[in-house]
Amino acid sequence: MKKVTVNDTYQKGYVYSLTEKPGINFDTEFKPELTPQKMLELGVFGGKYFNDRPNEFPKSWFTNAKLSKDDKDPSLNFYGVSASMPLSHWQKKGWIYKDDPRGWFQWYARYFMGRRIAGEDYRQIKRWLAMTRHIAQIKKNCPPGSLDCRKKQRQALLHWAYDSRKM
Figure 1 (cartoon, rainbow, N blue to C red):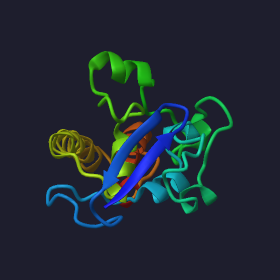
Figure 2: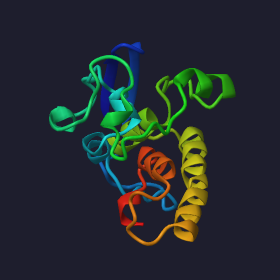
Figure 3: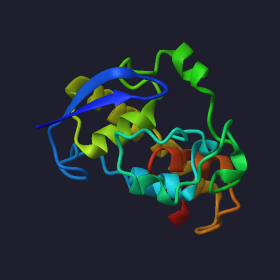
């Protein structure tokens, strides 16, 4: 079991354990279509998420990542639109887990790397599953492969590791 110590913009001295190898042994209900690295390369969260390049993740994740220098820049998103609320909104709603102060994508990146937290994993996977409502709307309202149709919903799905380019 490998221990990871985090010292970045959001956390100082946070330690967690990796109990699985990266990218395998996911919960049977959790089937993300994109890896964290691929998400960063496609352009998510206006390039703001992980623009400080936290060293707990592989350097390769950031080689071709679309990251902003400072603030969120929607033009860096794959669909070129803003499709996320600010972190303060998520905090206000109580959706941020204390050990993942950046939110869902931080949880997913750590889960991908092999961290497991039974109750929190279950909660986040339920949230991920709830995004399928957006898939249904795209399929109902857009011709297959029409990437200009419902760009905000498509971008939001990318933020949740669904590959909306294939819908």
